[in-house]
Length: 114
Length: 112
Image (cartoon, rainbow over all chains, first blue to last red; front, side, top):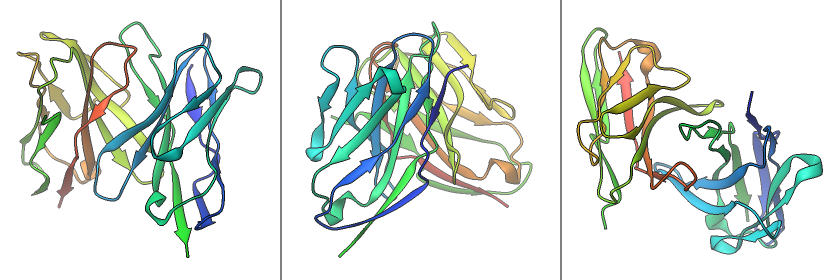
């Protein structure tokens, strides 16, 4: 069965420091992978997506993610975090069946300290 | 560009009451989904639709009903509300099965 694991429930990072959020997936074929961000009281916003090709993908807000097939990972990174990056981040894989269902990870809460 | 619109934004119900959460999208997307979000559990799929007249169950469909009579609208019905259905509900749509999903701002539902 397909699954998405985000090992870190909560991460605290200082403003200006680098950030890396982990995502591991279990999927039989080459997956379509996504990272979403959710600010408090808001819906999910797409940060970036990987379908094929270059394994390093650039997204909005200065984020990037690297697909590593050998490690079944799709980690999200940002070189220098801003206070506005405090939010919850979700990794997703899809479609996981012929109907187009998506599977989301449990999320990682990012807290940014001054 | 409205995107995905959910109403209401907040709702409090008593156990046993029924209600409908509304979802509308103006992007002519075929795929629409309903998720519930609970702390530490991420988003869990309730029901989804691949086009008007076609719906199917997700991971947690019990206690919920859906229909899709038009491309634009995908309402979620709670038949007899239970405290376990207290959650934040998100509606999402996408152009096709490979495309990223667009999310509404959510409905925060409390069942007393």
